[in-house]
Image (cartoon, rainbow, N blue to C red):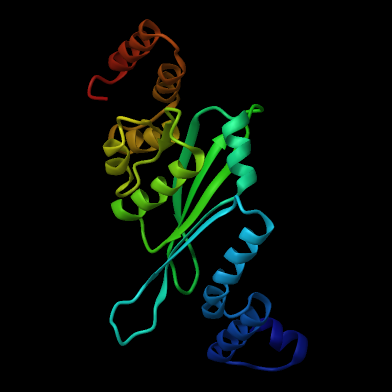
Length: 226
């Protein structure tokens, strides 16, 4: 508004500025509601380019009189599957974040670690919200893609519903919590500091029980409640 007044000597209201911004955003990014209908074409193109690409689109119809609407979307590229199973360790990190769009939703992500210890993209999903059902749906498709002949280690934060799903699959996978998130939760409850942080990091990095027990005893001496 100030720029318009300074550069063009035109005064506009806040409402006019917001409406104009929305029109410009639609021109640049496209109509969000129409983009959902284009997912079918996107999925078909992925399958045309490579039959090994896996895409799943879920629709829902709240009432028989209403049109079906978008519910969930999952995709995993064939190159990612082959690269992960042939070169990466059986380690998968999973996380979710909010989609800051008009229609909201959650983005679910699964990544591995390549031989250079860098993140390796594996699979993505868009769901309505993080629940036990949505995480179960995502992880089941993921395990079908990467195969279940190995015992994978999953690392995650304490996402809503995810812990329950991983516990139910404990016979076929292992689960560990992300240390960075674990320390953040620990800090909220007991307080932090470089000493406690370094002891936690040291305990997590030990490769044998005696070393872990030593670090935990040192942590206990600093703060017994912790």
